[in-house]
Length: 462
Image (cartoon, rainbow, N blue to C red; front, side):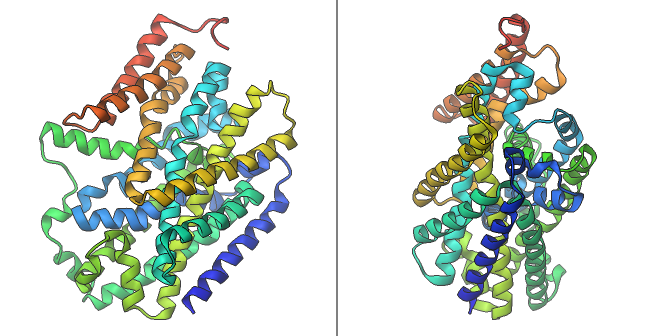
């Protein structure tokens, strides 16, 4: 019965994607839902940005191992990203009327910078998509017993199909429905488990105080590591196409800004549910947390709850992960077609050809991510790595490009290369603090220095 319910759910999702495809007439419809989403759809789409495998599986797993201190990156850093995007980026970028984030680099720094930025924008999504596919493979493994990689491939086929035909319209509509299922499913499970455990306070009182530590000790290395954890998603996901495309799909600049605030609050609130559920699992069924912590929640639900709760839980899990995966697949495909293929073709692509190239790119990125998902399985690491790549290479050019008029194209390109190169260097030659910290500082300082030494002129701004 549980498997049958999952099949029905996947079928309905595909049908919604097919229905949404009727709204896709242009590449703008496909990539940004025609910039027409009302507040409720825009907010749910932004809420669903990261509420997937890393929140339900990854964060709860890390929380069981290291407590609250170990999940600063997600959900707290993710909520910070949405808040900062609403405060400093949403209105400015919306008013520029851009199709992709790569278009910002073209408008602000020129075509050469657009090409370089696009190379840095698209690849990080492969690891991110892979993380979501791993999670869906794990779910199907727990529910059906099928090999995890078989579940990965099956999940990839379903999500890729409805993203391919419906684009951002399909993502937005399914996100709204999936967000409702996520909230109901997790809330009901949390209430039932809290009641079994003797109440909310009884569960919290059973947790060691050190596991609820939120702030670092006043030591240089620990404070630096703490700030780095906030920065991975908090700053690293600001220069990302999926946050951009969900925000820019709003029907106005004001809606875009308000959606960020609502989504940040909603994300931080709902993301506490998987953490609390993991505490209940540890309190009630300590045997379930042995082995792979990522499987603790689904194994507990399968072993100790009734069928309706299982349907709700696994339905909410699939909802969360599918909504995240679909936009993660669309994001690099949009960048690749709009900011790489289109310029390299000399701007000769018609809108219909651009739409087709975006759809083909979806198939390419989904295939690469599926292969990666079959060989790597740590969800939290896959997500973290993808955001760090954006932080060390693209954060400085985006921020300074918006807020410092003297930022130059040479400065932006140098910052991207210097940030990524230094991050790789510090990963190889390990230091006592996270490698993203010096890499980000190098990227920022490189942009400032090179922009001052090589300012933009009519000749080099191209």
